[in-house]
Length: 362
Image 1 (tube, rainbow, N blue to C red):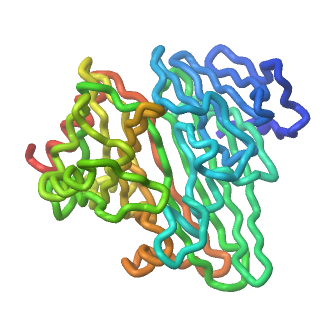
Image 2: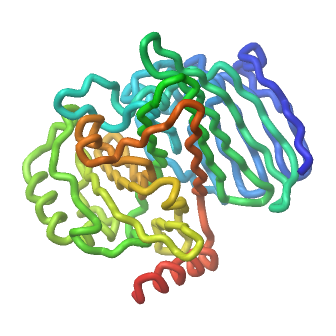
């Protein structure tokens, strides 16, 4: 494998976008949003992604074949804050690593933990070739230390290949302290819901396997008829599979799903569009055994995390601990996960659908 590393510094980023890596297949440019947040744009022959090297290493935007994949949001640009709800508009963000989800009774942690908008101390770009072809990637390191508390390092990678509409996402979290550390991690990937699309995924479509959340987080204010819809989904989760104007996901719908993996250990989730193309996520069940689905369609935003793969679900620390969903890292132990997300064309979508049908004889 041949790879070149380009170290970044905050002083490299200015309001005027500047190209810093250019090749026939892949380009990278640096810029600064009007809000002051540093941004990177990777471009290939299919589209582009925007990344936040020093704020959670989020993928803020993803656009392929002329279509914006990410959620519709009130935030046109990222805001320089660690408050989750005051800058929530990204295509992908890492959640955790000590706590995940909305705080349950007795919890005092922030929504989805400290990782989503973590201030990364170091960031760099790699460009190179491997057995799968040429690529460009954003990498970073975030060191978390708490006196009398946990210590860890987080090292994510976002990789874009030449002429591809798939994004490769990975995260490595290492317990750098001398005591065991509780770990909660979820990858939050937010697509825009497409009317007349449908959801297909590698799980049994039953109330036991696809469970509609009945608890209401403190930041959610449901309106009339909301609990009636939740109750109906608890009896028949397939009611949310067709994305139509009648799907009342205001303020949000949430599901916990027990995925099945194929012979390679992979789990698949698709939002299949009317034209046969799809949005997709592929994750490894051994790495990320729990899964959440989140849909929120309101007058101000439209978002659908078709799957949030994780080590836990998203009901907060105490509730997840009661479920047995807290992973323990020994001193020096590492957690790693690998995810692919993005856009599939119609033939690629058909191939993944066949894999799902084979698993369940659909």
